[in-house]
Image: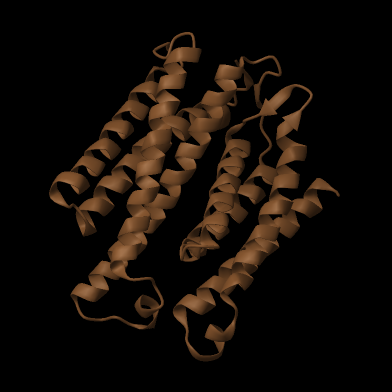
Amino acid sequence: MNSFLLAIAAVVCYLVSALIIAMRLFHSGNDRRIPRHAGIALGLVGVLLHGLFLYQQVVTDNGINLGFFDAASVISWTILLILLLSAIPKPVENLGIALLPLAALTILLQLRFPSSMFLAPDAPWGLRIHVLISLLAYSLFSMASVQAILLAIQDHHLRHRHPGGFIRSLPPLQTMEELLFEMIGTGFILLTLALISGFMFLQDMFAQHLVHKTILSIVAWLVFGALLWGRFRYGWRGQKALIWTLVGFVVLMLAYFGSKFVIEVVLKGGGTVG
């Protein structure tokens, strides 16, 4: 199928899926009769179409294209794949209200602003593993940041005794917290592996073009490590968990997308990775 049509079909599926999930979350009555899995199923159709589009755009004869908007689209695809598959057994599909439209936006930006930054076909397998683990880590922490915001809203409403329809539609607070720290814990393990693989398989993690990315990734690792320790040792939750999660997420996104944006969008650079 034509790449443009695949992209537009994926965008439509994502937006309609987000609308269905939002209708179930924010309203009661007839909207609640929409099957829970309807939004999930439509989102998965979008993920399939998005994946086919990415294959056509990212996998090239010159290698894997990880340009700025291409990489953002790959990460958004990974996020939704994890989210929607996880939503089948667990009540996490509400995160899709924010993540599905964002994924649709990355597709449109990818179409509008094509770029090229290739992971060469002959790149070492270790570098490929490092890139894959890094993408998975970024994806999980993105989900965790949205979950933390939703959890903070829920906690605020419950503390002020305003559990409206929106809050009643969410899983219990304890379940929401458990899901958040499962995401952060798994993301922390993946980020640890990403840093280890980077030091093992990249020639110099503190080279001029990598030093800011390395330092910021280590700072994010320390932030999430401190959050997990605070949760284990002192039972951190609520606003404190939100702040630490968002700080770690912002630092991690600056580590990856900050440098890519400056090099590829501001300076209009391109090239080959590996």
